[in-house]
Image (cartoon, rainbow, N blue to C red; front, top):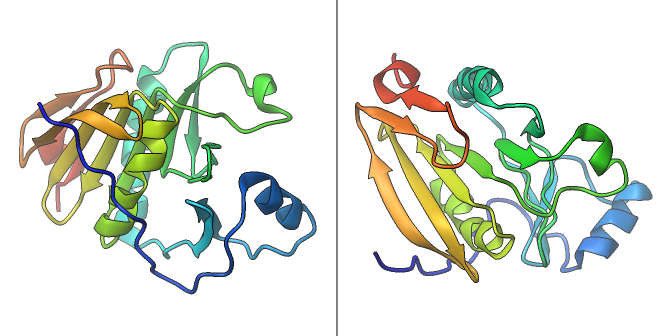
Length: 190
């Protein structure tokens, strides 16, 4: 298995200005950062609007995740993970801990993040470097048009050492969330 090369972020909206995580938080607290943005590699990006199909996939996967995740883990939707120079908001994440443990700071890693890619493949793929750098154990890119899920595991520096593509069809089980299995034909049913 070869390491996946880090990719640069893809601009899908106007770039506002480069800044660090602390400045991003401070400006956000003052109401100076527009809503529906995320910090990637020191730059603020507008988030892409979500289609009904994107929302459908998110809800279906969220339902499956909540049923599988044991106590001591939190399932979140579109919530920040603070990385070195980024604060992406994955569509879904599973974080070790309890809710009260994140009262004063966002999680800095996750067991699993899921990005749903209906029309945002390049943008979502550009986040892999931040997720690997933060030590996220497993990252799924749900490639909706292709009816596939691209799985990245084994973070090493700012890259994942393992990449596998599943589907169309078949079953996929998370290596880090016991009991979380999806049937690809079911989630991608028309």
